[in-house]
Figure 1 (cartoon, rainbow, N blue to C red):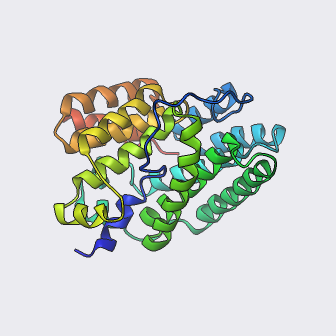
Figure 2: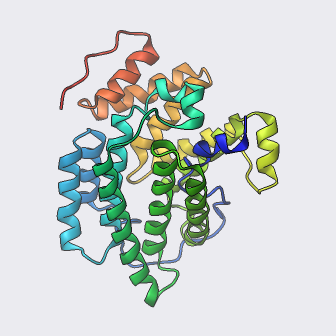
Length: 296
């Protein structure tokens, strides 16, 4: 298999495979939504994880209208479009994750054109706001966080949904550069562990020949370390904790760690009882009949 077939996997690493600089101390910053929990944003992400995409967008748009200079509002809006499309395409399920062809090459067919247009428009606005912040402080953590997420989400969209592997790789490298600067100042940004862990896990799962080729590009993988890193996000993430749980659960299923997968999926179904994705995955992990899909 050509090495380009692995790029959809690499693009899952929306943050860099860079060292977290765990010994560094966070620099005191002004209160920011990316690094200090904002109840309204948490409520919006909860709506997103309940698959109430329209309501989640409305919540984020309402917050953004009152905080027009903060790029994180636009990042959150973009996330609703990406998460919705990945949900519609079945890209967050064990059926996708355990299917090697899809796992390596992305979805069948094409994503919704209008939804993807809205997604990219929100990313463009987030980048514009982030760069405005950088005019006064090039190391502004809010800006770096937004730029990292914007590049990472676009990398996901390019590879998994639109199968533009080379574009996805460029965005992944861009996210890597921003996140190096971010994590040097904020090593406790636990949401970032998700991408580091996904990258480590997936690259560590590749054929040894592929891993050897990637090694020359400075890209390394370790499945055990990857799961440990995703576990940190699943335990202590601010906004992406549930996403960390579903990704760790899917990895656990691949590794036949059924008890861990069942535990995580049970927790997700209890926290988000209206999410038919979590309910379905829990049923699969338990070997039970899959519940009926909730029509929306």
